[in-house]
Amino acid sequence: MSATPNTRRIAAAALTAALLVPLSACGSGGDEKKADDAASASVPASAGAKAANLTVLAASSLTDVFNTAKAAYEKSHPGTKVTVSFAGSQELAAQVKQGAPADALVTADTKTMDGLKAETNDATVIAKNRLVIATGKGNPFKVDELKDLADSKIKVVLTAPEVPVGRYGEQILDAQKIEVKPVSQEPNVRAVLSKVELGEADAGLVYKTDTVKSGDKVVAVDIPDEQNAVASYPAATLKQSKNAEAAAAFVAWLSSPEAQKILQDAGFQKA
Image (cartoon, rainbow, N blue to C red; front, side, top):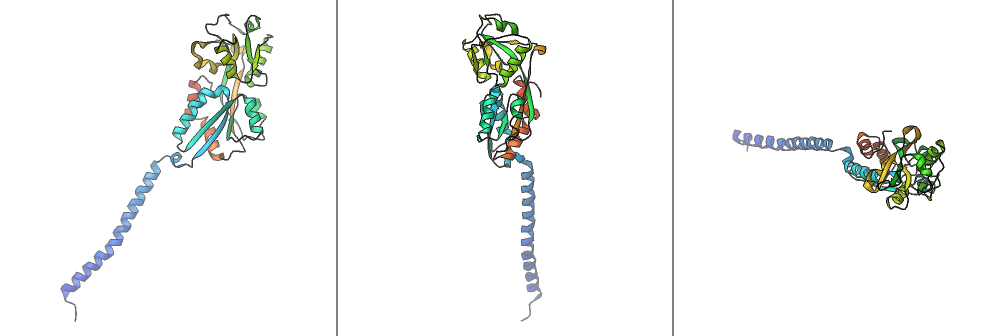
């Protein structure tokens, strides 16, 4: 039996509707993909970065500022956790040579870093510092200049000469022909500061930045530039790092405006 005109019209309409369904679905999927792509583009690349747990070895004089810096870095780099191990630069160098698991190193002098060229990649100086005389609360011995440290009545504590700040201290004292007989030589600058804060020593040579958070526990006596030494802080990734890309990103960030502001707010000088 032949189809009537009305029947043919109904069949044609049904066929058209059936053909439009997959086309509509394709159009919807394309719009969703575009929306997904736009959403992905609006998310910072670091938010989708592979998580990394970084271990950074840093000079003890960086203790306070690096605790602030690592919190800022973790906030702007989701998925990355930074653990910082602090010690004297010579101790850190020994750890690196012994193969301690770490990703990056920051020392308080270029000499120590230069001695680790076999273990590190290229280094970049991220900050500078200067020495001051730290004296007890209220400066009871009225220490005003380097030559006052030669007074036998003053208990002076220094860092060991193999420590960067100890080497800098020895350098500036020798240049002024000042002989100081310390009551002790400490393994790092924080130990010197602690002894002065606790009253176990009357004075010591430390970095200017070390005295920032001591409040009235110590008095920082400035040393004139012509008698002082400039300490440079180089940073480098370690060749043994298992997180090479993430470690390189952190070291590069230390020279960024954000990190430099943190360092300079803590009293460090621009590199």
